Length: 212
Ligand code: 2DT
Figure (cartoon, rainbow, N blue to C red):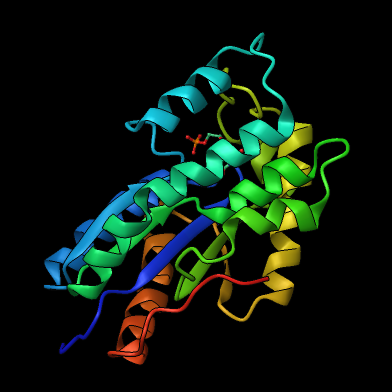
């Protein structure tokens, strides 16, 4: 397949929807088809802001102000912006496990956190060509093996986040909802189909910036 620039593909979804497994499989399948692709995930815990974020997530006694942690998550994306732009412009596609939408969803459901305010630091980041939202019904979500021990890994928070994601999916032009309840392979094939068709569609169109 002839390709121009790389595609920015974001995978969003609640915990236990299989995002991480699918992201890895997608990168492999795309590379196997000679579509050069790299995996990224946010938060990127390997950077300086990532270390702070990781500490905040692991240590629930850490009392960082909600706006401050929101800006750190956003800064963590900005830290990676130039590298992402370069890869995409050089023809490498990116499969990204969580992006700005997780940032907005997890912060805006907190008390006194205004949605408009939460969106602002994301403006100007690279706009994904496609956001694939992996959805699960509450029942299936609850029946999957247990949550981890980090902050946010609880049912109430995940249910609220799911609603924010659905609002994005209803209103943004670049979103597609994928039912994540099937087998790993079946879900993989659905995601892969969407991604390949998007890569064929974008050709060499310029990268766009996020705006809300
Ligand atoms: P992982 O379990 O995927 O490592 O995520 N989060 C994530 C935010 O609150 N804001 C963000 O901008 C991002 C990208 C979601 C760790 C947790 O961090 C949350 C779960």
